[in-house]
Length: 124
Ligand SMILES: [Zn+2]
Image 1 (cartoon, rainbow, N blue to C red):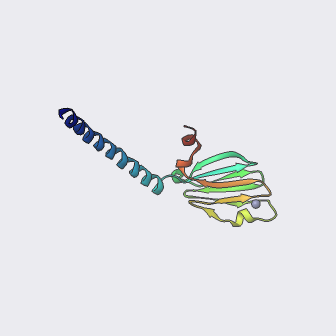
Image 2: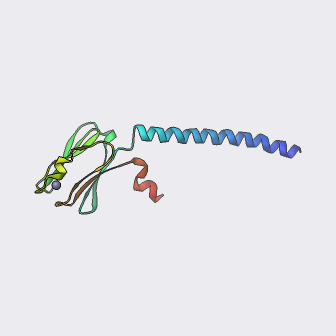
Image 3: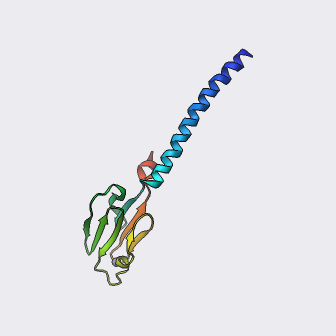
């Protein structure tokens, strides 16, 4: 019986540790959802050429990509101009949190990804 009492005491300690870990996990998930996780990934011909964390950006800049010019702003990304005939990518506007801009004629793709889906995390 003494043995069982000892176990339950250490069990209580473990429950406290697990509870703390779970609270930390929940908090980090909330933080990622609210603050981080706004990464724009640019593909050309199916290959990743840039990965930009929009939530950390402080000033806007442009990325010339053959006929396309991509404008990266703090919190947003859009196709500023393109030499494609349809101009659909330019008219798709600004990406903030989710979605994608596709320029089919020039095979350019801009896609919003969340930090938790980063390839580094998957590879682990
Ligand atoms: Zn286009």
